[in-house]
Image (cartoon, rainbow, N blue to C red; front, side):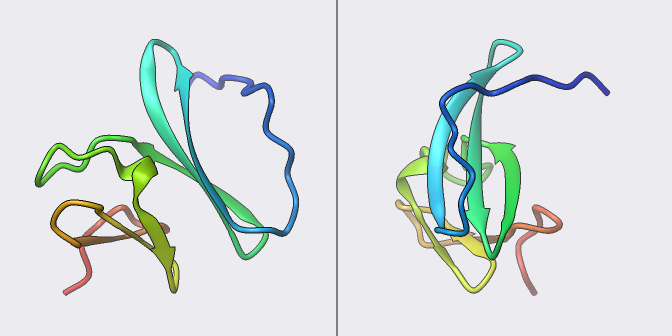
Amino acid sequence: MKWYKILDIQFTDQPFITKVKAGGKSICLVGFKGNIYALSSICPHAGADLSEGICVQGKIVCPFHRYTYDLETGKRPK
């Protein structure tokens, strides 16, 4: 696995969602409860930009269809 250093991210305990470029790909970074999660910025269901969504209870919510994806697994909760 290749690692990329992301500049201009100030890590605090405050929640955040932002989109960055790493390795030529758009990545959505989510800061939640002291952790940072990285996932594709594109919703696999609707193609929406997940960095424009919200984070609720450890899940990112798609801004188009309100689908949720678990930050730990990337999967849609059952």
